[in-house]
Length: 512
Image (cartoon, rainbow, N blue to C red):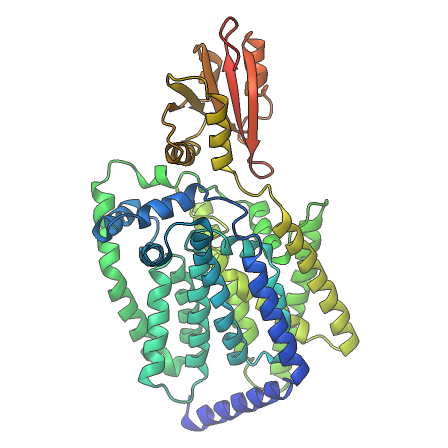
């Protein structure tokens, strides 16, 4: 691009910025403050309603280790970079291990993410209407609120991804590049990729846009990415060394990643739109939101061609961020031997998608139509978000199951076996039992077929109800059919993945 074209493009961007700024009335700013208040309140409401889950307990126990042991444990785990655990260790040193303090760490990261969200909207020249709609949609999204309460790295991933996107758009728009701006972008990328491997997909989308539409800055950005790769190389070396020396295959550690299909892909975007339990709600949401976004992208392209100017960065950049990381993870998980799919990793695409929806709504004309459809979209998202935030069946309460198990066996001194059909219950239940000073229980993994042959006089069985073959009798029914007595049963967990803990005894033994 010649210097004259560069100057003309910069002047056009300044004019767009001025036009957007003119839409910020006092009422619009007051509404933004109110929505930010809603955003914060949603992430603090019922913060401690759930105790720590299985993965959260791993976070806590890893952060308890000494610095060298912590890094060694995270390297051995290999599935996540170390930044979250290092920051969590500092957090524990400041405030200890009270549940409220622990949960405040991810919540605070999620709350801080509203700052780069607003700055990103400003850099994209979103204007007051689109910015406020975007903040409203993000504030009430149940998927985002849920991860704001989870002691894992996903809120931190959200925060650093938004920081990186904001600084990248500044890089894109700046008439001249300063050392400070480049260092800030590099730092945001470094924090991002050391938080979660999926952060590289954000860098990848940015690289595609620079190479495709910002050739004058391609060399500079390539140097930034090269420096980022060099800075990440020590971690890659450490993980590669750990993988070469470990006896357990990585595929075993990642075996719980399911292979997605079209329904799984649709379910992810339904989480972003706002899920509902009624029939065909996912299809209705995908159709409505999809038509809105598709029309907006077509309208932006048509307007740019009619005015013989380049299409603005905003819509296409947001569309790429909302689609390409998801498409990449989906394709790898479908085509490779090992799936890497999980909706929590795709939090990097959640806010760009909701920003895209807000930008699409802002393009609607006439004004009455825009307001009518916007109210419908916000109402859909808000009702869904409120429903999701009020639910109490979204987590397995391992602490409650452990407490019920201990109380039911209060009169028994000798060890008791707890048979499991998968290995998930062992770690969290052992943690909570040990924390209560009860080490009487031995957890044993068995196959579904081996349940038929269990011969102990007295034992417990814990299993995922959703994973049990639907064409077979349930384990309690099988036990009754063998003449065994089925005692107290406890259950906890979300629909489709509820864990059941049940006592089994032979006739002639003391009833529990």
